[in-house]
Image (cartoon, rainbow, N blue to C red; front, side, top):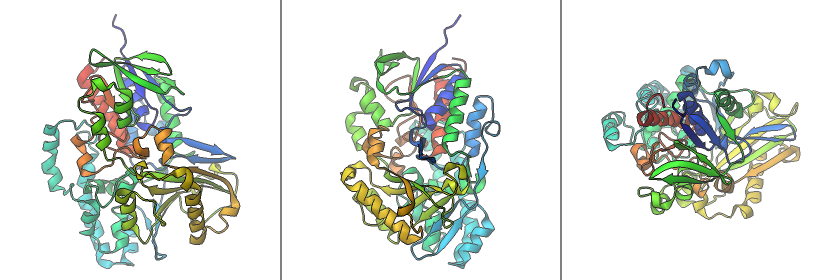
Length: 497
């Protein structure tokens, strides 16, 4: 009688949970090790004084990808978790007091765009028609959901990418369709949601706008952590084991292969290991240097890490009708602000903000008549050298003052909760190199085969999922990375391990 093969997954973010479910469903006896006392990684949950906050991801944009994960375990998304469609997806406020309700409704979008530029409104359908094949290509099993780990595979994709103009800088590409600065922003800002510079990220990321239009933007009652809880429950129902408070110290490499994981002094033998931890951290801190010929310390140091985030979690004793579920407030100095964050790596005096106010949709996430608000300011990662212990209170006060002037009257005097999170949290609590918030940046030279692979180039039986590997950050990306990982494992172990 054959002995069941064992898998160990490092990290309980969305990528790790997806990997664990897929491996357990394949027949591996799977153990998930999580450093922190709750699952979710960046998608944690914060509770304080009756207010509930999602710590990171705040929306669902590809329910079909989530459904595919549930189906891999013999169930469906619809059976496990309710979703609520958001309309509009975001209200975007510009520096001059104008705003646009961004949604997938073509007629609504064109009507709003006509207020600012009639020709831009006429270009909307053409832009979406051109973006649709990019979305279908990236979201297909053959690309986003499959390992892109050889130059042969990459070169087979290049002709299609060139035809789709996927390698042009996104903002430049969008500017070929739209003249008005508002519309150029609306259809090019999405790389910021995955840690990328809209002026440098390749235009393949215009597929996010197409994805939102086709599949919608959704919310799940209780917040995004409800999805974390649902996936954890499914994994355990399938027989998987979750160990919280189990920080991994090292991956044991014996005979040139990953053989075990040591966490809190306990060795967990494994026939394969999957890391959902930061890729740079995994290679540099967990894999012996003697086992690394490709991912040397020097190469890891050269990786371009994504930007970080400064976050405020605000519990407010009143409601603000001006806020939508998702609200973006754009700085007049938007392009220079992006340069400050990505190139100059300084802390500027102005900011663009993203506000997540789930109490607009689910009032149970705050006491009655109150508001739960998460405020995100994109900032440089810790390569900046910013001393956040010195700067955080000043910067938070500046944001609160700005929001009051913008229209949230009495914000500071009505605060019951004001929790501050800086890039130091990402570096120290989540082991993200340089305090990155989204893994390595999604630039052209860190896309596809040029990203760390789903199957380790250095250590057999070691695999990667999450924001730092193919296809990239964002909930759909990390779930697709687990799908790509599964294909690697099936190639290496067969369909019935």
